[in-house]
Image (tube, rainbow, N blue to C red; front, side, top):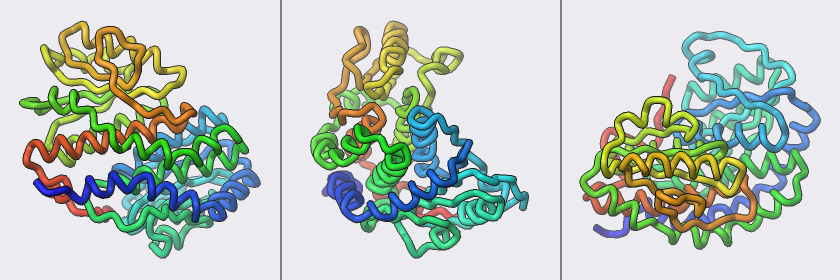
Length: 341
């Protein structure tokens, strides 16, 4: 199979992030200043699909970094049920690659009407979503042609964590963010051939994470389904032993995505426990003894590690799709922009 558009876009991730870092600073800092002035006791997020996984990542990052909780609101509250929420003093973060989906736009509009400071992250700064926001953050990812979002997902995570780092005035995190292009150059060249081999003849997999990396686990499971037609489920490593582990049999594939943070040891322990039950388990940590450790590029900060992990995952899952004779650029039943009401 010829090189796919998805692979080309995965390899463009480092330059896309560099472009965001070179061009997005003024807008990011202005939004961060506005959030600091708002001094919210809580924030809300509005997103679907991959963008909602970005929001989950930012939820954990905000709670760890700032102690400010983020709650996800179903867009249907505004678009279908026509309810108005009281969001006085809050911040609403909306994430949408296209900025076109009517339900996301309506929820963001309602949040602003309800008293929230509205911040939108989109790859289309002239989109309807950008127009209903107080601050619109251009992702600067460039055109993304493959149906499977890759560089727009990564740039959304970078824009979001950069916004939080500027708000927190966290010098160490800001330094790690600005070093990401170099780190991602190596991350996109790691494609985990052992995982691809373990998936041969298999049509189910578990993806595990904890904390910010749980958001990456969610994105990984979606991409397995979207690009490889593999049934994948994402679980927190704190939840998987509470029932889901029952379907694990000999050789059942599991991928555990760990950042270098306080959850790494706990996730490694669960990975080893599942491996002891006969599963074929891979983990992005050296702290495992029964599971197989995967090569990773660490970023120098626990909150940016998930960004490197998803870059390597994208490289692997594209190769997995190609090995199955599936074109990841045009998954069946899907189109690039899904507009829900």
